[in-house]
Image 1 (cartoon, rainbow, N blue to C red):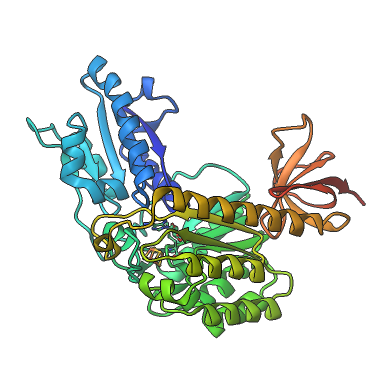
Image 2: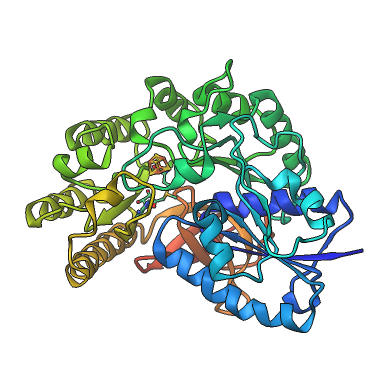
Length: 434
Ligand code: SAM
Ligand code: SF4
């Protein structure tokens, strides 16, 4: 039986896609191996969101080329967003790559792997297919307390900086009743937490159910303790969805709500169709309807045209909102996007300075928020042994914070923990029994 080794780069959706590919390949006689040395097929499932992500993959491919020289029968493939984005150029830069398969081509993997490679060109599966949802494929999921379930694919928003709509294609949703069935199956296998995934997950609509309906129906599945989703777009946070978040206790009190910038001028140039005031009104409504909800965000610094005043507005917004955590990025021009035409006018050292300022600001806010939790009791969904100290356990709070605690506990169990110490990234405490 041939073996396959997959390395995954980028977001949670790519991890979910890797599970999908592995499931599909196992149905065609492949088994998974965890080392490239023993693999007949090596796949890099890639990300194209920033230049850095692509550079890492090119470096890794050059390393893996050595395996290919030693074992000419080995198949080396690049799958996912970068295969779609770079296409011909990737074949030029890494001519030893046998296979290029984009996010809508995974179904063809067994067929492409079984074919003989031509003299020069790698086999390609790069057609975007607006109907492809992989609804009938069974993912090879890593066993665990939490499972990620892709509910929609693609994106129709075309933010001016973003490559996603070009490499993942148009928005499409999986059928709601089948998703609920999938969650039921996962619950029967011991999954306690579900994370619904989509690039604009709250734009979900299967023709009958919207995202609010999907949440409400899933919340009824016995055995599931927590339900999360990522990433919602602020403009798709409908009143119906806010009602569902407020009404369903198993929907975790935590929301990743990417804002990207605190300046209206920059938001407009980014094509983010909301204003800072509208975003803050949404945050106020969420906090009113679901008290204590933890918020996280994404911010890009150094977008073309972002000046000191715009940047100061982003800092001010972060001071006002006080996110629990934030993913902070330097703008990276992506060929093919609208913003690419505007160049990259903010100097690299200025981008670095702005990024460092935001990191320092967010670290101090996160540390303050977590310090305020010392003395509180939090409910922890236990995931397994902590990396350290030895003998301690680790899990997540409802707000998705990592909690390390002393005391025996079993993965999948909900344990009450009294928080004793905190950092900007985690909480430490004691399990309360009885
Ligand atoms: N769909 C999600 C949304 O709209 O919030 C996020 C998708 S993207 C995978 C994750 C984050 O990467 C974005 O929220 C954005 O902050 C960042 N990002 C996307 N394109 C970027 C670029 N060209 N340069 C830097 N960061 C970028
Ligand atoms: Fe990219 Fe914008 Fe779509 Fe998010 S909503 S994936 S940032 S285009």
